[in-house]
Length: 122
Image 1 (cartoon, rainbow, N blue to C red):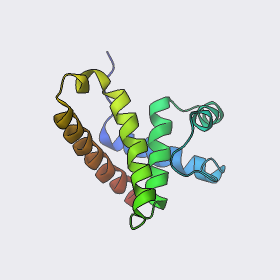
Image 2 (tube, rainbow, N blue to C red):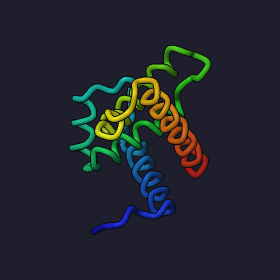
Image 3 (tube, one colour):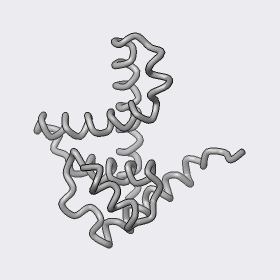
């Protein structure tokens, strides 16, 4: 059984993948919501796992989203929450709707904090 990578390794992977995609124009024209077709194309081109590609795109989009523009920020949040919901579907289905929304929002906020920390490293 494989262990999850350490935080330092995960940070290094995120930084390197984002830098590589930036250098090769991988984020050119991206804005939330990113279509499934675009995700598929980028995944094939950059040979990243689904999860890693989403992380790179979400970190990049967060660095460019204008949080004062409520609609743009909401669109970004919904894209991230949709991925989190899909990834954690089985666990979330066992919760009442309000608790599910609360847990999803809490997870989103923790992830956004993590993304800001990574952006500070880049």
